[in-house]
Length: 366
Image (cartoon, rainbow, N blue to C red; front, top):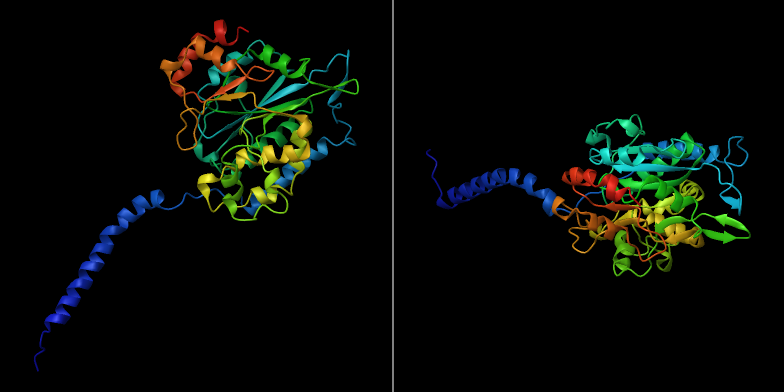
């Protein structure tokens, strides 16, 4: 018996075919645009990475304990005494090549290696090249990093722990980005940090402070605090104790060790955010921790100059070659605090030649 074609069934069949074909065609577009439509993902700290870091931090803490025979002297010095040759640990945190390495090389030229050390944390996926010179062999075991994620906190802690283990005379720990340049000579920088009369005098002793921005009145504070959800930060971090500040700082060894010992606040700041547009844990963790633990031991300002006047997507202004001049350097040095700015960011890589031309006669001429 011959089958009778039904118009309604035929139309339904054609509609299903068209729908299936449309879905098939839309798949490539979905994969193409999904990263732009869906909320951005943030790097989570894996359990194995966490275990590796804790082991590293514990070794650094143990090496600096007072019972350790190689424990360095106290951070306090009698007035009138000669300071020992404590060092500055320059810690470069990068996910690109160190474009300004020639400038930093000149910065370190003719400087005794008894006064500084260099360390580099480079995202393994970035294939950062070793620029040689003072940077040769200075890469530390590193893990993946991503902006606006707790992975940047872990990277900074890794740098501090490695520097403490490497040299007991490392006393100041300066975190620096690949887009950062020095604004003064090494000699000026060292004198400003170690021999300035503007350090605290307490009980006849000189107490050195950490240079870290700690802000409590930023208009974004509310959104940043609740980025992980309501009451998630409690009880460890009450709202009135939450602080923000620059990602880049110069910490004393006392405060570097305090950071490595912390577990309580880290458990909160490592949590993922549900409102990622307000989540910048690398700008929250260090200011909050140090403000809660030792506010008097911090300056509450940074020595790294950043221009936020025309920021885009949370990034500060990036200086380009037409803007580079001696006048810019002089302007970037100026501060409302008692210290000149020592570093500045961000500069585009094609600024290098112009900066090198004025290095000796402007930047390193204090």
